[in-house]
Image 1 (cartoon, rainbow, N blue to C red):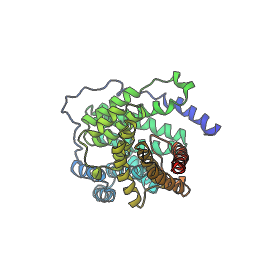
Image 2 (image 1 turned 120 degrees about the vertical axis):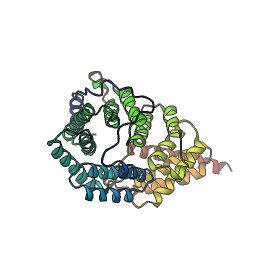
Image 3 (image 1 turned 30 degrees about the vertical axis):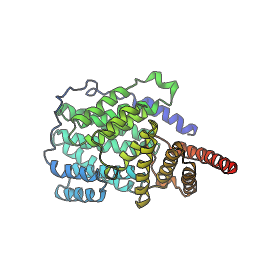
Image 4 (image 1 turned 90 degrees about the horizontal axis):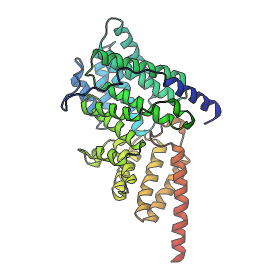
Length: 369
């Protein structure tokens, strides 16, 4: 990170912690079986669209939401759903090929919600608008547009709170609040000099995300993966893995984000044979998918090589590491997204170190024989 980016980042962190969040300061205590209310207009198609996303059937989900948008032009819901599908699809395979479509739908959701909110308050319009601003803040942050990300984050948080004021049982909104509270603290922890200026809201964020997972209506599956990701970042590996294993489906039916997190957590808990099976499944899907990024294929080979090396299969591990090093040369970072829990720089460095170590060890073993 060069000096200009560093100083802009410091300013961004200081600004973003100036946002005051009233509704999220005291969490509600819903009954164990209580769920957020239904979307009064889109419950059935929205539920089906989410099911398709979590079955890795993004094109079908988009087609469904396209038809919904045609039937309800001017409503913020359908373009927000489409933006969510595009974002999830790109994150799942770590490519940015649908960025333009994402931004178009985010803008439509924002404009439609603002127009309708001028006619009267509605918690769902606030929810959709807040989600759209949240997506826009996220991609502006990735583009180092700190002020743009700050402004959109502020709008998103304000509208989530307004929605909760109108409908306190809109528990899905706590996913956005919790993700903000956790990651704004976690990402700023790298600036150790400044952390004394900032409240550590990671615990609050985890509680809010869990609230959405337990009591949300439409964000439960997403909140579960967001919570597992945050717990991984917080190094609470056992709890994160336990969450994934609750009602786990067979590997071939788990989505990409779930597979990746599962594989990483199995490695962190030294369950290397199980990690190997996960990364084999992940790698097969990546190699078969037209949009899968080169960097993701590199990392999956690296993680599989790590699993094999930990089990003593050095030659197989070396073969995979060699494949990954060759593939690394074909990577175009401008077309890719990175993991939320590790930078590609760390992946590349770890791969090269493992490759060199395996070459030495396999070479030494060959000479001894």
